[in-house]
Image (cartoon, rainbow, N blue to C red; front, side, top):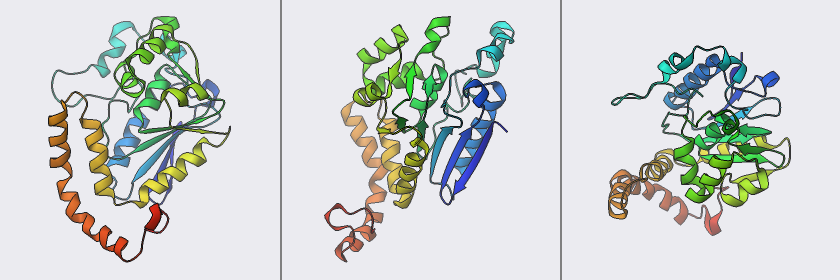
Length: 263
């Protein structure tokens, strides 16, 4: 199968495996990824996911050979965004999903075109030193339709996003780190391992509080400061009372000096 899941307690590693095409996306893979991430979000035992492309490539975008066999505009009908209600699966699979739990993209090799959109859909990106991103679909007149024009400016700012979107140029891992397009830079071959360590760290924390903070960050876009602060308070105030237990553990000596290992 092109999509499989390896589970380690509360951490799911979602693996896309079409190495013969550098993990370019076809319809079947997109649907399988969509279903897997829905299952992850609904599974009470799952707390964090790692998204990794097997064989040295995260995702080279939409499979253009597959796309060339589709019939015109009708091929996009299954992905049409409705005026109301929940959107259907995106062309790249899960990129329209608004999950309640964090996903970490472990990026090796190319994360380009639609693959870049999948990487920036994740909450955190770990890139290998030889990895790269880029709006490579610029060459063929194919637009971003999986959230790229929305998420990229929110990550790196409008000016940098415009540069990358308009030129389609390659962004190497060191530049990605410098401009905020990724959060961690690791040696070649270590992205999955580092991402899984991060996922296990996140999975150790009290989950409802962590998810409330994550939800507030995601939901504040487009709100003015006062409305965003009001939303933060209303969405998180119940977590403060739960935090009393954590405060008691601190009083008993846990977590002193910023120690996250013994909590």
